[in-house]
Image (cartoon, rainbow, N blue to C red; front, side):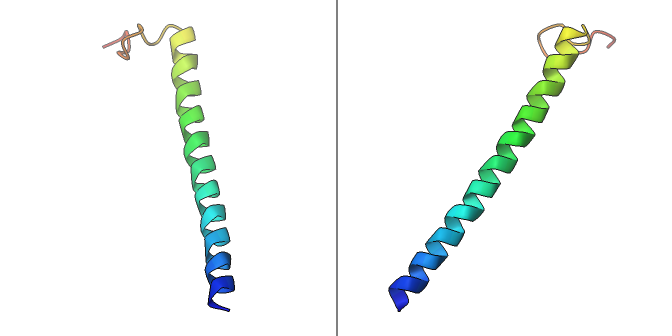
Length: 53
């Protein structure tokens, strides 16, 4: 009985971490995509600085 409860908690924990990792990865992808777009459009000079400052 305790083992089943432990197993259930483990599964829920894995699902939670899976969601958390997906969220982190999607945020990272959005961040990289925004930087990539700025780099392509010439707003960033490659060192992370914007050209107009």
